[in-house]
Amino acid sequence: MPIAVDIDVMLAKRKMSVGELADRVGITPANLAVLKNGRAKAVRFATLAALCEVLECQPGDLLRWEAASGGSA
Image (cartoon, rainbow, N blue to C red):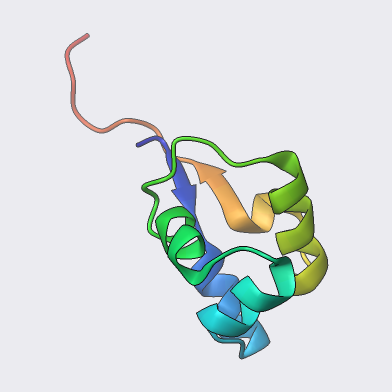
């Protein structure tokens, strides 16, 4: 997937557990794990805003685009 999710990086910087983040954001730990592991197909702006508020960061700190590797030209 060309969008990489760096929630783990921010969790480590903030010394926060997945459970604590899920609790403070208001989503289940299972749904946070889906997002965190890059398996989510979409994320609501409200959820992204809540993650940024709790982690005191910008959306770009959590999400980044990666160019597809390989392929034909």
